[in-house]
Length: 244
Image (tube, rainbow, N blue to C red; front, top):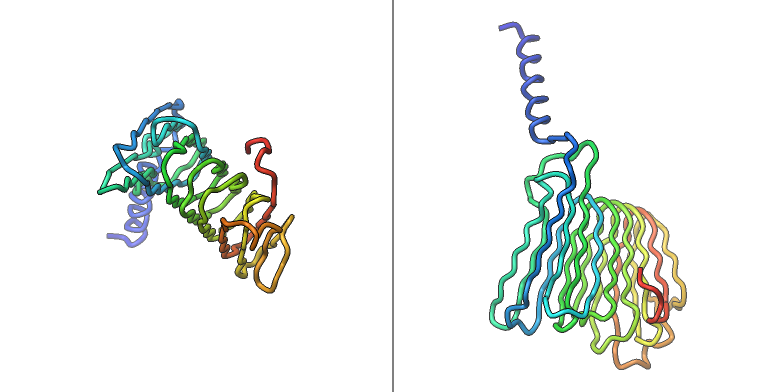
């Protein structure tokens, strides 16, 4: 067979496969809600894995562990929600489908998640491209781990906290703003990246940044940030400010 014909046939097959995988025809937006009960757990591990889209996560005074609303216009963007209890620990996983293809065209993928405030939470987030707004005030946090992707993230952990916990942020490409408490001790270590670091209400001591309450408060938030390509802004704020 002529070599040029073979190449042409291969390209046609490749393009056909890409079109089938991408399915970029616009579709109407679907709305799906999920409610997850704690199932008798005394603490929970929450893992969120989101690709491209917009995420809003807040703490809420509710009986359920999770109240969620998802809006999407591709079937492949329908998230998977899994919850299991092992002993006293509940494990909640919310994530996009792993083999979801490439999204072209107008894509809608919005998550609105509300976590109950009654249980200690170990929170892990793997973010893709888009905007994430994390209002974690009022949650009983034991740890927060965030892998940023491409886009913008705002996280609020200001306000009172009854226990010490750690926060780890692996910077991506984009910007991150973190609101910190004024009345709870904060110690932040920022490792090098290619972006810029801005702080407000923190004092630099060697490689560490601390607020005025550090060393005087019985509770300490330990923060470690590995800078990426972009900007990181740390701000000490009063806990009664308007929600993000």
